[in-house]
Image 1 (cartoon, rainbow over the protein chains, first blue to last red):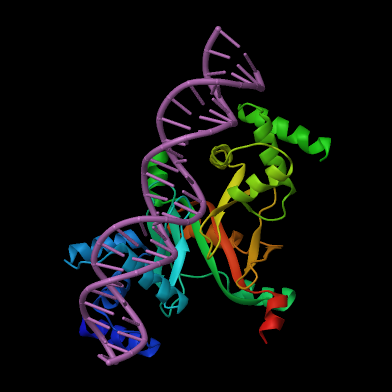
Image 2 (cartoon, rainbow over the protein chains, first blue to last red; image 1 turned 60 degrees about the vertical axis):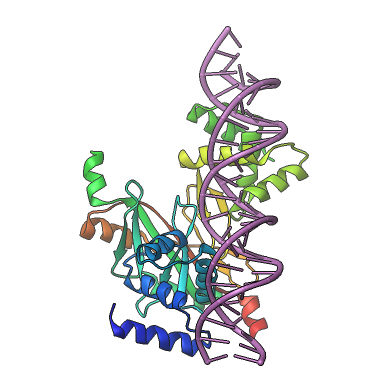
Length: 146
Length: 146
DNA sequence: TTAGTTGCAAAAGCTTTGCAGGAGA
DNA sequence: TCTCCTGCAAAGCTTTTGCAACTAA
């Protein structure tokens, strides 16, 4: 854990005008360090590993607050029955989900910028975002399948 | 209801080797007639209006069966806590969802064909599908907002 | 006849809510 | 101090499951 992150997180919470509690910092740190979007339960287990005592309801309330403030993005993955949450970093990302092993692989580009502009011009929609998730067989599962 | 649809639905179920029950036909007809993806509950209410007596569990079981056979697509919409189902017609479609009035507007094109081919070539993924949903303010809500 | 479906009830699992006590500003 | 958060318990909702009765083939 770098002081850097802690500082950023403190600033972020202060800027939002909410209290800087240890739970909120812990949740944001977990999200900061994660490569992929996490479920509330996964965050719960990771915090437990860190010997942080917390309740799921607190995690849900925190994630809801962060989602409303657009600090976190809530997504749903094909075939899963629970929500995942990820930090809305500066960079905009999507992922590939393997239908067999459920691995989530981050993708480099977002192919939608031009398309959104087109929608704005042609349909007069004020686009604020999108959900995109590509699924199929990853390299490994593709080999195993054959 | 055209005989046409009934015939198609009968053929479809026969081809899949499942029993052609009145409930399955009714659910497929509802989906056929719907412009947008429906929740299990919405299907339930529509069937009730048609004086069809059915249980939600039957609807879920039918939708699951149809999803597995790739006749139906299961999607999740931003900010909703339940699944929606739509017929996988010949044409592949996406929709725009208004964050204010929750109207779902079908879009003409899918901007992802080239991107998926690229993923296949560069990352060696065997892409089988994707979820895409664009959200923002629709024309009407955009005016109201200003 | 018999295998596949459905009615019905109950449970499962994720998420939300209420309230009192506790911690940040 | 006072407002905002969290612990804890319980409920809410969608979805799944089990089993007996039923029905299409």
